[in-house]
Image (tube, rainbow, N blue to C red):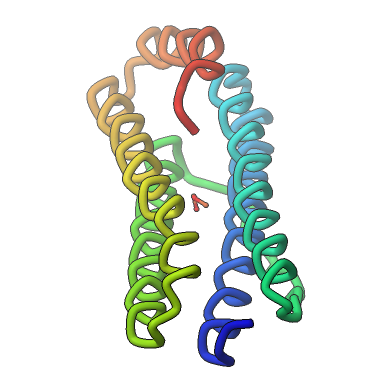
Length: 167
Ligand code: OFO
C-alpha cells in the first residue's frame, strides 16, 4: 500500500487522463464536422489512448490496495476557431500534463515509494512523445497556414499515416 499523499496524486492523475480523453474527443468531433477525415481519426484514436492511460493508473492503484475515485467530468468546449488554435491548446495541455507527471515523480521520491516511481517512468516517456507529437503537428499546421490545398494534403497524409504515429 502507498501513502495517502501518493494515492491522492495518483487519483488526480487518473482523472486528468480522463479529462484528456474527453478533450481529444471534443476536438475530434469539431474536426470531423469541419470535414477533416484524417485529423479526426487521429484525434478519436488518441482519445482512446488517453483512456488507456487512465486505466493503467486505475489498475495500479487497485493492485496496491488503494481506492479509486472518479471525478465528475468537466464540461469541455467543442468549438474551436481554427486547427491552429486547436493544436495550440493541445500542446499547452500536454505540457501541463508533463508538469503534473513530473510533480508526481517528485512526490514518489520524497515518499521513498520506489514502486510508484518505477510505475511512473512509463508516463515520463509517454509525455516526451506526446509533447513532441503535438508540437510536430502544430509546426506543420503553422507552415501550411491558410493554404486550403496544403490542409487538404495534410489531412490526407494524417489519414494514411496516423496508425503508424506513436501515440
Ligand atoms: Fe495521457 O498523455 Fe496526453 O494527455
